[in-house]
Length: 383
Image (cartoon, rainbow, N blue to C red):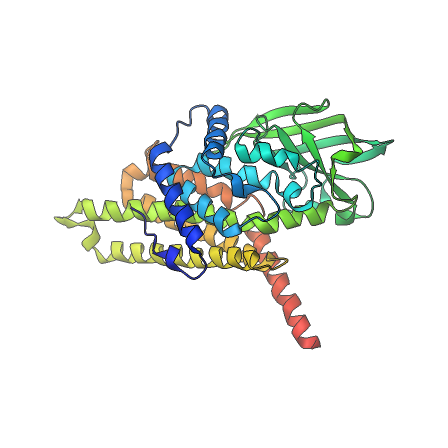
């Protein structure tokens, strides 16, 4: 049983504690799922999460980031694929929630019910973390746009019903010339060029756009607003990546505590060894410190902060990097079982690695944090 004392922290309200209790009960009944067919499992997970009401907060005019983080942490602790399926319903529709018009927001009813899967198509072969350099183009053609280019490492690629696609419309150089579009999966000219396999099976794909024609009404927001939209979406959802890492780390700590208490070595419990106690203490410290950063960022956003770029970057960087260390210690404490295929600790080891890369790699988060600190210092100097 995982420690839930953190729910008593002042970041949370009674409704958050009720949500955590309801979701924990659901997870114990429904998870983990079979991962032999990740496409089919993701579709079923989204449907089941929608029917249970847990997708309601993924989209809409008021997104409660603390709820998103609690859900991701809890799902990740039980089943990494369930966390993945949930997360994409929010990230994939974030642009609609924050900037979409009434017609575009009709999609949200479907995604919240689990009847449609969404995807966030930003990364390209030549531009991942450096969004301003993307090459996909959208050229005006009367009352339509023609889109050409390629996206890669797109989560839900191949199974999504709706893609949020960012392309260069040319209003200005770099970040100033990007726009955002909604692309239904059956749009002519959209092709799934390759399904991508990673160390932890998730539905990922490389997408191609070949003279794909979209009505101008498919644009989210205004021309040239794409970079702002992308960053605003990431500002909301980046903290939740840290929450997923926290869930993985918390499960690794739970498994390690059980292992240390039940395993004997040299005639004594593994837990009696001071070196093991030292590892467990470091793991517990990293888990609590990550939780504080994650829920600080979520609370700050929920309290009305326009941007939480620095807080979210800190949460994602620390939570994902330290979760990697916590899980590595768990593998070590489990010995041979820790690397046995199918063991929970082995699956956690494969799950955590990608979180240090997507939605801004760890080194990029350091740049974001440093620039934020320098900008704040310059503001102080000018006052």
